[in-house]
Length: 235
Image (cartoon, rainbow, N blue to C red; front, side, top):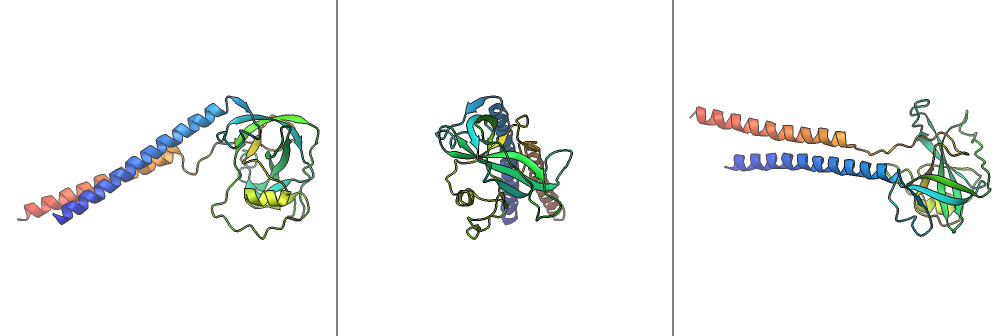
């Protein structure tokens, strides 16, 4: 009886994990559909709604760049077929909204210089303009390290590794609206831009994991039945 109870518990656990993976796959498909829908409509971004819009919402904003204080995100891989996976920089430029407030614009990926000591020039015009792009969040490291030691003072553009919002506000000496905007690939004054909707685990992998859990449940059941059969046959 104990063996039967333990076997049923193990099988139930495997089945539950399988259905959990199927549920996760359905959630990811729903998110991907919502992101695709968000990209089809454009919303005017303001200081009021910046923190309420969904990720990958296509937005329109008006204002001007601050060319003197730019951030280079270090060790960022290229997403293009021309430089697949090549490390470089992503250029973040502060943008002053005409309604007030500052937001970071990701102007794209740029190859690093011949040596780490050579920082590429990323100057951009500061005349008022209208931009469109996708609302997103800052790239995140797998493990967040303490960034309190990063100095607020330094030369520009500043090279940083996976900076957090608070770090950027301290370095730029100004509050920032949440997130950032991925500049449209067709927009001027940008670099290489191949924006992809990515998940750490996509729907297909969730389904593959579900199949594995269900297979383990089936294997456990088969082993149990074989052992029971042999037990009663030997009597």
